[in-house]
Length: 263
Image (cartoon, rainbow, N blue to C red; front, side, top):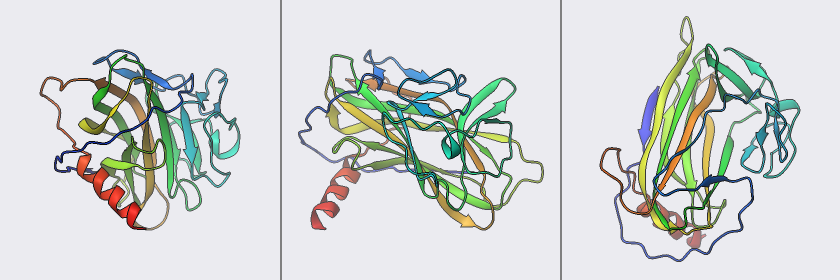
C-alpha cells in the first residue's frame, strides 16, 4: 500500500474563528500535550446511538456518510443494515460498517466498500478542546488495516475541519490500498498520521473535526476491507519536542478559501 502525505509550505495566516457549540459526547482533549486514544476493541459492529449500548459507538462522536442505507448524523440512531454489519475476521462481500478482528482478540472499526456503499464515503470524528488553552498543533495517529482480497484499490484520505466547523476540510494525509489482490490475503497494518501545525488556533471550548474518506482509485471488481484502530489525537499549545514529521496546512486553507470565494 502507498502512503501519500500532503506536505504544504508554511504561510503566515491571521484568521479569526469563533467557538462552536460543544456536544457533551465529543472526544475531549482535556489536557495540553496528553493524547486521547480510542482502540475500538469494545465495538462489535452493532451500529451507532446517542445513548450507545454495549458494542455500539456514540453517534454524538462518530458519523458515517455515503452508505446505500443513507447518511448517518451526529446524535442519530443508526443500528441496522449498512450501519451494523456485526463482526468478521476477514473477507466479506456485503457493504457497510463492521467490527473486524485484525488479530486474535484485537478488533478495529472497519468498512467494506462496494459500488453503492462508501464510494465515496466518510467517517467523521468530532472532538473538543477542553484543555483551558488554545491549541496550535495537533498530533493525529492511527493504525490503518487493509485486507487485500480484491483487484480494486481505494484511497483513504485523512482531513481536518477548523474554519467552518464540519463544512470545509483540508487533507493532510492519505494512503492507498494495493490494486492487485494478494494470493493469501491477511490484515496488513499501516501506521498513519503525524504532527501538524494549525493554520488557526483551536480555542478552548471549540470543536475540531477529523474525517477519513474513502473512494475508488484504480482497478476493477470488488474492493478491499479497511479498518481503523488505535486512533489517537494530542493537542499542543506550544510546539512540542521534535520527532514527528510536520504537516503544515496553512497554504491549503488559503488556497481552499480562495477557490470557494471565487465560486
